[in-house]
Each structure stands twice: as C-alpha cells, then as structure tokens.
Image (cartoon, rainbow over the protein chains, first blue to last red):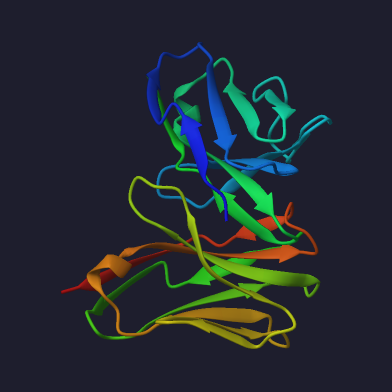
Amino acid sequence: SAVISQKPSRDICQRGTSLTIQCQVDSQVTMMFWYRQQPGQSLTLIATANQGSEATYESGFVIDKFPISRPNLTFSTLTVSNMSPEDSSIYLCSVGKGTYEQYFGPGTRLTVT
Amino acid sequence: GENVEQHPSTLSVQEGDSAVIKCTYSDSASNYFPWYKQELGKGPQLIIDIRSNVGEKKDQRIAVTLNKTAKHFSLHITETQPEDSAVYFCAASIRNNNDMRFGAGTRLTVKP
C-alpha cells in the first residue's frame, strides 16, 4: 500500500480565487491521479500525472482550470483556478502501485463561496 | 469506454446479517475489479480486489465474486458490524491502473 497525505485538508475560498492542493506519498511512484468527488457522488478522474511528462486530462477537464505539477516521484499539486461555487467538491489524489492497485489520500474538502 | 453500474444505492441491514452489493461492467476487456470503502470525512480505502483470472476471493468477513461471462461482480460482507457502515464503491479497470471507472456507490448502514 502507500501512505498519502494531502494539504490542506479543507478550505473555504472566495469565488474567482485559486487554491493549490498538495499530495505527498511516502514512496516513489510513477503514476499519480487526481479525482473530484462532488457531494454524495462517485469519483471522477480529472487527470493522470506522471513524473517527467505533461498531465493527461479527462474529457471535461482542462489544464487552464486544473493545472497540475509533478516535480518528482513522491509529490504532485493540483490547482483549482478561478473558482466558482460549482467547484465545491472533495479533491482526492491517488497513486498507482503495482500493475493494478490505486491508493487514495484523505482528500481536500473545498467550499467556494 | 467502460461503464460501471452499482446496486443498490442504499442498503440497511441488522448487525450480524450479511450484505451484498452488485456491480456490472460493460467492457469485456476489463480485468481488475477493486472495492473501496469510504468512511465519512475520509478517502476511499481499498478493501479487496479481484482479477479476471479468479472467480472468487475472500478475506475474513469480506469476499468478492466475479462472473466474467455475465460481466458482473459482487461484494459480500458477512456478520456485519456497525463499523462496516460506510459508502462502498466498486470499480473496473482495463489492463493498467490509469483507466479505472467507478460505480455510483452504495451507502451501507448496519444497525446495532
């Protein structure tokens, strides 16, 4: 498995501002992922972040809105830009281990007012 | 792409009873099927998984079964306890772990 931490754990932000979420893992991993979980909903993949390459975004998510950095094998950031109330969600990072498994961090609970 | 359906959306059982959650998937190429448990205020926790070359896997009180022909898989929890109360998500993945699709989730409540 993996021990994953996220910062901040929660935040309340004003519309129009940006928030950067950090994800740290206790071991080197090739693949890191960012998900959004809207209240009471399932998990939706935002993008895949591999070290040394540009993040790959899923349909409906764009780099200008959700820029991602992956500077090394244990760390990644997701920025939620120009926020609106519709961005209020839980943002989760996960890491790929082995061929199949994904392990999730505790999440960042974002409220946009 | 892959589509995963999960039923029921809510499930309430009495402590000690069994709980069963079912998922179906659309893409026959899917070969990895994990189950996650998400407690309130926490991230999803991988509790059990199964690969397409296995029909059943058990870990203490939880088990997962897979029917590749019918393209469905199920989570079975026996002797349920109040601490089993959570939202459970199934998922299906094709070939590698950057293509994982999740079901809508099942909110399980175990009443003492």
